[in-house]
Image 1 (spheres, rainbow, N blue to C red):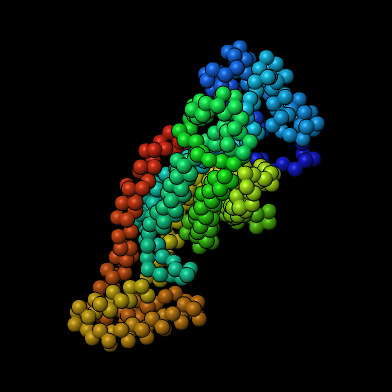
Image 2 (image 1 turned 120 degrees about the vertical axis):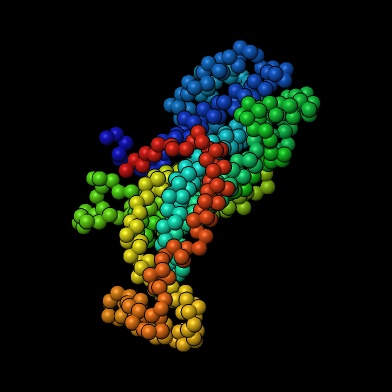
Length: 476
């Protein structure tokens, strides 16, 4: 196979969706540059500047005719990628060559293109988050009343339900979606600002008419459906914009890591598993194994995203005055790779959430093993209601519970607390089977799930109805 002698990013070959990979591909990047050059030319034509209809038509006809080989030759000579592609397009559209990039600096093209691509990428992340929320919301409703051991400090605590626990996972992703939507709502076009953000070059070509400069900038922004433009910039938009976007991805990675780790632990307890395909192999040696490899993949990708968040913050902090170029090489890697890794891990989580396998009998057995201890207070209260002495009953339960605990931990036996209480005359009148109904100990968990799905999940389903049930290609 050609190309196997060179490194290829596994983010593209193994993890991210084709759509996200294409979004950060070189063709999309350069095509977006060209779209901005064309939009600027159109705005200058409408402003009455020296740009003709003929020139615009030639740019439109050759927009997607990108000669990457020619651009590579120019860049090798010039050491400047924007100028290289500018010359390459000028060769394809010679009549428009003279007005391409008129008044602009590289950041007028590159930064605006990066913001357009980032907006599309954030929208795709939002769609994946909505799919995860939809799947976990459905799972929570289905299992809203199935009692399970609540675990604090990874020790048995009071009961909860499988659905309530899923609602906790889901709510984290709801928060993440709101954060991504906030980043989208606040995303502004950089605008056409010139070399240091003063718009001096555009003021000159507009004959000193500052209102014409403002109209020109607004025209370009509207062509890319941006309602707002950065009010002030240096040569570049503030790299805090990138840092904020990366931070939003980092929050999503936090939720992914939490969810995937919980599922991995539940798989070890044999209570809940990720979907396992018919011919999937869990181990090259241990043929019986059903490793949670998808959730393990998701946690690995999440940790990678965590590391990139810090890089974005450092880049934003490092910029000197109106700009330095040390952001460029870092930004070319951190922003695309953070989005690709986020896309990959959310694909995994959506797939897992849609196909979670629950083993109610195992869950019930774990509940039954611990419930006698959890029910001891209710048993004592029932005894008091029947006329027993509260302090005496407490002491008897304490002794029986200690003995039952020793049987479990030291002897490896089953929890026989209930048998001990049945044999104690002090508890003879209590209907222990009724006290031991697990559903007596799940509180309002089912109602909480219903309220959560109605208030938080349903509105998201309505907003993203066209993006739900996206097909998932996990590559491998």
